[in-house]
Image 1 (spheres, rainbow, N blue to C red):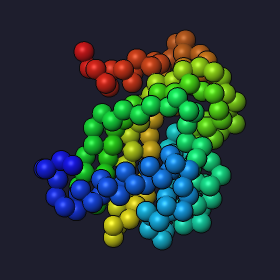
Image 2 (image 1 turned 45 degrees about the vertical axis):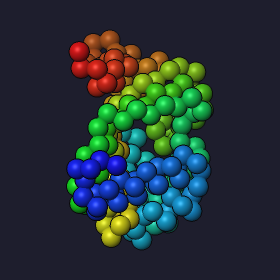
Image 3 (image 1 turned 135 degrees about the horizontal axis):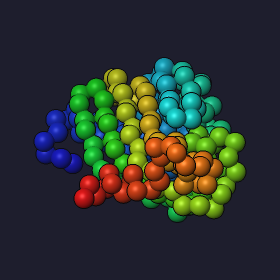
Image 4 (image 1 turned 180 degrees about the horizontal axis):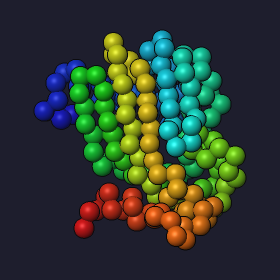
Length: 169
């Protein structure tokens, strides 16, 4: 852990890592145990998620936990900012679109194309549990990379935007 973090901030980082690891492992019960009794989750670009314990549980069960990304998914943390009440993670995620990703691309069948995209995840914490997640990414860039959006005449870029986050030069 980072020595500059307070004990409370370190606990928030540990909580978030436990939460994400449970999502990736397909462990719905552990994922939900990391959350408050009235959480919410909003994937802003796709307007997917859930509100309240049962709404979030249903969303995780039906669309995310164990179905997070294709098998070749890689996540690279760019930055992590932690306060006493929230965590903000900036990361780049890359994958080949070989499975349906309902939380990110509802109703979009696999295209077999590669995607590299920057994400920002804002996690609220209350009483030692995740109270909310707000997740942002550039959906136009994802759709362009999948061949589903023609960027002609539009201010849209592909994977180079994520690569710029990783290497500003």
